[in-house]
Image 1 (cartoon, protein in one colour):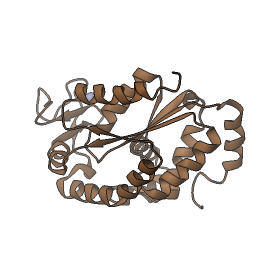
Image 2 (cartoon, rainbow, N blue to C red; image 1 turned 135 degrees about the vertical axis):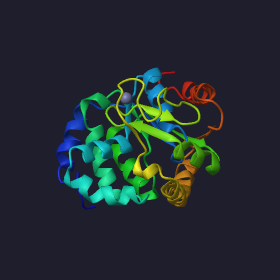
Image 3 (tube, rainbow, N blue to C red; image 1 turned 120 degrees about the vertical axis):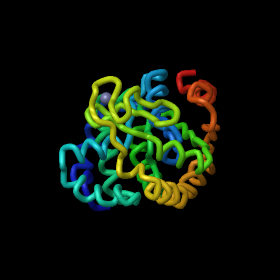
Image 4 (cartoon, protein in one colour; image 1 turned 90 degrees about the vertical axis):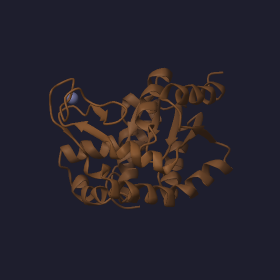
Length: 242
Ligand SMILES: [Zn+2]
């Protein structure tokens, strides 16, 4: 395995060995626009887990204009996947930080079989007591409708939807008055490509967790509160503390 993040694998392993003794890991799978971010934040709050989004990690790299960002940005803007070794390295470095020691929820990762296998290696190293994989199910046409209407505040990332949650003044953030923009990867043609790419790669990931008995399917077509209630039923039943 080459690429960013693996050069210091040994030092990361050594550090992890000192504090990680079996925290909870939740993996949230679902297509772009399924509402993973919203639910992941709520799950993190409810169960005291750190919320880790590979999308946020990538955007953070893009803001800082890192070498990784320069490699990843053209791919993201075309709706393509960032190479596995880059994403795995980024995730491994992130979860080695001390704020993840009580457990974490992965939002938008793993997206490929190689990433799932890489993650299993990392988990073995962490001696994770409990891994729960939640697969959010939504119809593609609903996703396209949701994402094409999404607008993001340029300054603080506040999220709007032109249909469900429009701003009071068109194009202006209610909270801070800054400009609302459409992310380049939310344009309809790019969304279709993102969903196609997602589905193509996620099937073996679903099978991988399914045969290990870790996979739970969650209906994500309904409102966020009902989706969260469905998720909590699974996570409460799987609580490692019980
Ligand atoms: Zn704002």
